[in-house]
Length: 562
Image (cartoon, rainbow, N blue to C red; front, side, top):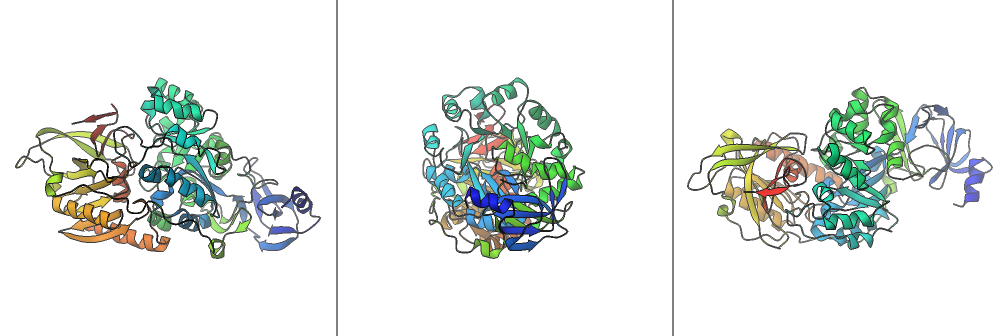
C-alpha cells in the first residue's frame, strides 16, 4: 500500500482494508483505555479512537486490544519443530514477533543452518528476526560440528531479518579480550549485542557491559537482575521448559522498571507449549504473582520492541505494524483473536506456505561403542553434577566413590547416574564420562542429540548396555530423544533435521514427547523435563559443573578437570 492509501484510510476518506470494530485499545505508553475502532491498511495500523468503515470488518466489541507479543530470545530448535510449524504453533497465542538465535543448528552445520532460518523468515506469518550466533562453539572446551568466525557473521549481517549479534556466551573470553571474541565485538560495534553472563557481578560485569552488551536473559535472582538493570542492561525475564526464572524475577517487574524489562522463553518444548502456553502463560503467571498488568503487557510488547530497535511495533497506534492481540480477559490473558501484520490469524493463514527442503540430514556419526566405553576408572574424590530442578545452573558436588573391578559405577541408591557425552560430528570420536545427581533414575538409559550447544550425544543411565543401545538408536533415526530399559527401546522421537528438529507436525511431536515423558518416569526419573535438563548439563558456559565430549568442566575456573 502507498503512503497516499494509508493517509486516505487513516482519515476515513475511503474504507480501510480491515477494521476492528468496537473494542478498547490499551495504550502501552499512557495506560489509557481508548474506545473506538482500529483501522488497518495492508500491514499497518492507520487509525484508532474513531469510527471507521472497512472492506472487511471484525466485531471485537467488549474486548481489550493490546500489541502483539514479542519473544525477545529463543532457540526455535528447542521446540523440536521447523520454523514454519513453530509459527503455526505459537502465533495463535499472540506471538507476532520472535527474535531467534539459531546457534543450535549452527553448531551442527554452520552457516547453512543460519541461512535455513533466514530463508524461513520470508515464509512465516509471524515476523521472525535473527540475531547471528556469536559463539559457535560456545567455548574451546567442546567439539562442535562447525565454527563461525566474524567473517562468516558479517557476510549475513545485512540480511533484512538480522538485528545484530546473539547471546555472547563466552563471557570469560570477553573479559580476557580473547582475539576471536574481540573480532566479533568490533565487527558488530554499534549494533545490538545480546548478553549471556550468569552470576557475573561487580567490576567483571562492568567490563562485560562496556563491551557493548545491551540485553541479558541469564539473571536468576532479583538481586542479580537489579544490579544489571542499574548498570544499564535490559533484563529479559526467562521462563523455558528448564530455565524457570519468572518467580524469582517477578518482584523486579514494576511500572518503574517495565520499560527496561522484556519476556523470553529461550528453550521451550512443544509439550509445555500445548499444556501451558508460551508468552501468554508467562503473562498470566506474572499477573497472578501480583505484577501490575500494564507493566506485564508493556514488557511483552513495547519494551521488547524498544530494546531491540524495532520502532515500528509495540503499540496500537497509527504508523505501527498491525500486530494486535484481542483479549476477552486481561488478567488471564484470554486470547480471542490475533492479527499479525494485518492478517487475521486462523488456520487458513498458514496454508500454502513452502520453503526449501530439510537441512542437516544424516548428521549423527558415532565412534564404535560398547559397554566398556562408559566405564569410569579411578577412585576417591569424584566430581558430581548436581542438578537444580528448574534451573540450568548446577552444583559442583564431590563424593568418595569406591571402584568395583576398576570402575566407579552408577549407584541408584545414592542417585548417582552415569552421564556421558559422545562426539557425533565424526571429528574425533571422544567419549567423556562422569556422574550426575538429580534424575532419580533406577534403571535403563535416556539419550539425546539435543546437547547444548555442541549437540553431541548426551546419555544418562544406570546400565551401560542400555546406554549403548540408546546411542546407536539415535544414530539410526538421525538424532532425537530415546528411552531404553532392559535392552528395549521404550519410546523415541526422531529429530532428523540436524538431530534437533522434527519433519513432522506439532501434534505428532507433542504425542511422542508425552510417550517419552511417561517412559522416562517408568525409569524412576523425577525431573519435569529430563531431556532438556540433560541437554544443559553439557553447556560449559553455565556455572558450576558441566560435561562435554572433552571431559568434566569446572565453569567457575573455565577449565577441564580430571
